[in-house]
Length: 358
Image (cartoon, rainbow, N blue to C red; front, side, top):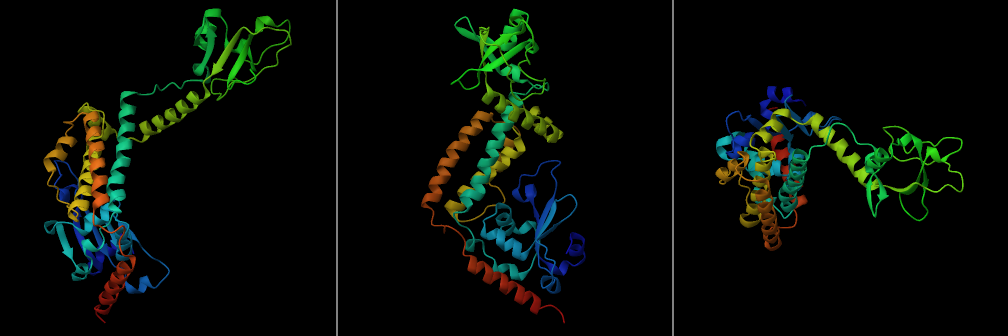
């Protein structure tokens, strides 16, 4: 089964809907029109080796789920699937009568706390990361181990680089010896203290990820005591890598849109995050998935960048506290009835295949 095959065999469709921002009532000028739906495998293919869970067009804005996969995701309270089942009638292009066997109230459960609010919370973490990346960009030139080394100096400390400059030394002229019982602390020596031989230097090369030790003759007094902030360097390397990857992979148009409203967050993503939070509360309170958003004006204000980032974060914390309390007292079951879902699947397949023309 492929997307093209499904388009050529519409009799296999059980549900065909317009989805996304149009169904949410959040579409604006330039919004794409997405489609989602449900199909059933031809009986012959169902009994064969090849199974197809879902098909999509090349741009992935038209996605169709096989009925078994749809029901499986429904039992997990997947937000996209619950939204598809609850698509408002004006956005449903086709609905097979067998879809009446699948009722929203048979599947809503307290799992929605994790799938709706939990997913929204994960997006908030990403938003905080994006906010940090925008407001604290990392220089393209990568720092070295030397930038995380410090020397005890005048009852305090100074950076190793400043100390070297002050003494007109280079790191290649220096040698290190570990100081017993002190983690990442070293005794530092200089070439001029040797009568013969050379030290190896503090690092082997610019790209080194640790300091290196040298052999030091007995009886030589150290010139300084140096600490390498290895943990700080490890955190920096991780953040540097993540920042460069984000910079390479980011959607430039989306990023420029983020910058344009000057609020340092992805406004579209933040809008959908609040949509999911509000839907999570509605499910617990009213036992239904409201796709066409009654809070359109508020959500579009978020998309337009009319709120400060910290203001939104405060709202998120308040909403999460309220949502957690709603689910604690909600009469929703802890999870859907898997046996009932399987029974529905078997009934749909049996009736659909029995009614096929001979």
